[in-house]
Length: 313
Image 1 (spheres, rainbow, N blue to C red):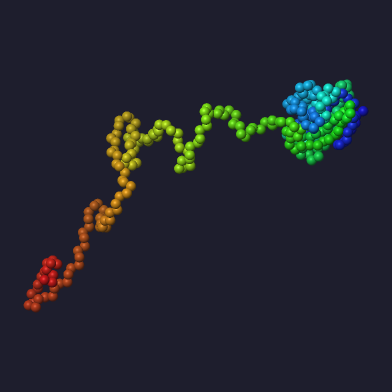
Image 2: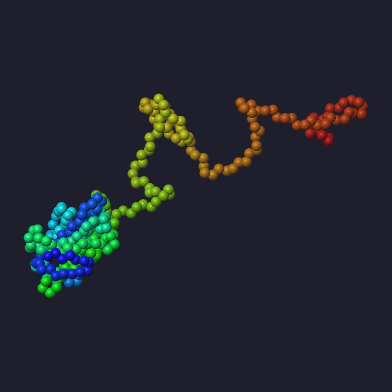
């Protein structure tokens, strides 16, 4: 007879081993579901990481628990775990049956059901227990579907349906599992990077432009541009040495003209008259003529003295 469980209810199990089957209905866009089982000690935590049996660790070292491959059945898809209750170590006080989904939360998984079968019973026997697993919020990506716990000399099953939004990693961490979730260590060097031999050298101080100076070594001058037909271009400044022409004939090198000194005395010159085009000076305007001397009393005209040295003599 099958017992239909509701959340929070419990029932004794008359079986030496159970097969826990998760079943759901596949749908477009629905995430995939994985079953797992955790063997817990008296403190509610695993004794070692080996007590977590799931798709990446499908068999307990003692053989008392294992994860079976997924199967397609008329009702949908199934994922299964088995536990040999009679062979469990006395230190194991509880067995947690869990589910996790990849690709979305459990609200996108239709028809999720947990069924417990007697592992020693006939292959097509009816389940001992069925429980419709309904998440509390729908945002969970990992669920504790139920737990098996010791009661005297036997075992009982409690239906739970409690979940985590942190997925399988959060579920395993809750029970003391050290999970490697595949995220790279920020402090570790990237894969493929090779460490330099010897001590790490400090970076040089930034240069005046904000960058770093070029490494020491011979300086290679950039090639000079050449003119058409092998003739060099005109020197852009007096001390420039033009490049060799294309046909291998050296050109005369212009003598280097030293740059003017940094400080030169300032010489004040009188302004020079402007000269017209073609370099010929203009005639200078004559000064205004002195007024003519009055005629002599005798009626004869007298020339004025020539030059300023005769004035007022």
